[in-house]
Amino acid sequence: GAVVSQHPSRVICKSGTSVKIECRSLDFQATTMFWYRQFPKQSLMLMATSNEGSKATYEQGVEKDKFLINHASLTLSTLTVTSAHPEDSSFYICSATRYLSRGNNQPQHFGDGTRLSIL
Amino acid sequence: AQKITQTQPGMFVQEKEAVTLDCTYDTSDPSYGLFWYKQPSSGEMIFLIYQGSYDQQNATEGRYSLNFQKARKSANLVISASQLGDSAMYFCAMREKRSNFGNEKLTFGTGTRLTIIP
Image (cartoon, rainbow over all chains, first blue to last red; front, top):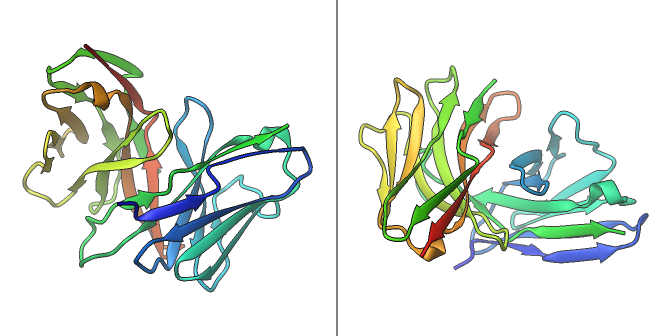
């Protein structure tokens, strides 16, 4: 079954609207979650790392004020695209690692993604 | 800086045949992890298989196996007995530890679009 849940799956809204996307870890605590962006026919690019109880760390070139991240609990991280414009239209996907045992073999589990379309 | 290279933008394979998807990587870290994910047209990322840099044996998961050649820095995915449901994008990814941020980063290749022909 799903390990990470992401909502909503699709958003269509007008330019200037702020959009919030939720990412939840199911049945496990995730002190760290990751937010990616994927343009059509391209690869996933890490936008930021969401840290529970502290500020998110953003990748170079990602606007902190445009993409607000809140990780208020051990099972929930939110990404808010503020004052969205057509160029923000993209596929946004979150992930978290469920550490079942010691070692490095635990993969990042991804949500189903959110297709954001700004008109 | 790390880099993941997938040189095959697209592949067409006959159903029931085996297929190899190429992935090479570049890193100076002795400890790293290599992952393969499948992304169907619906968009979700499905974890397939993992190979650690210190693993002595090639990873296998059902019909998936990873041909890990450490000296050549390659981690090719082999899918045996391909099925129509295998048609999807396949991404190779490498995980690095980030000392500054205290956590990890997953870097993806550009992907290979696999199409299985009936």
